[in-house]
Image (cartoon, rainbow, N blue to C red; front, side):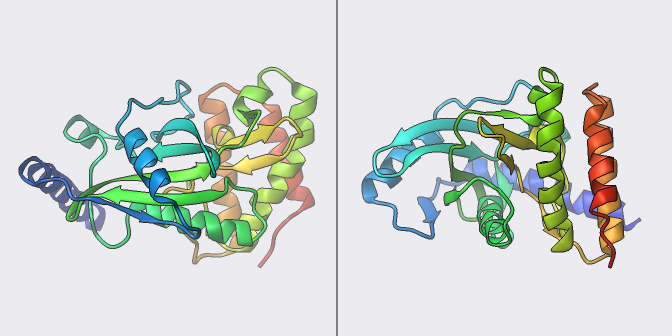
Length: 252
């Protein structure tokens, strides 16, 4: 009953958000960054917030669409815009009701937290949003060069996949030890660069998990297995994940 009520309230707010956006004038852009963004960088970023984006063609690519650009003084970055899923996407594609921090700010802060814990994540550069009661938002992070997803790698190089899976397990173990739930960890959200360094991406909706580590470990394993089976990826991804967790078995 509680879940049904929450869904109805959430849907009502989303529809209200659509109506408000139709009627209101767009507010100015708001930025947040741990460093200083020069005025020229802000202006350039805003230009790219409104250009056509690249939506991942893989079913495991997620809903976030991205633009990759190089900025003098910053380097190569990935600009991620937040896109809706589910039925509501037919009414509104990228606008959210503002209740506290924006999704881009939350993910920006999580990336900083994860990096501090030793988890390999894209380096966050800035977050931005536009709107007051309803908003669109973007996350700017440093581009990881010469990379491919673990899902892509597993389909072409079994030996290399087995090698990097040990590193993936180590990274996920760090998340579990710190009681952090990624919520959507699958081979499409793991990047592998040319030096076999692995990075975990897409921390949108991630949160601190209040349950036991054993339960969190189970959630990660189940989500990983569902994704591998659903997208018909090589079984070694499940095999190596299970073997790695048996080796690094985590207890409370």
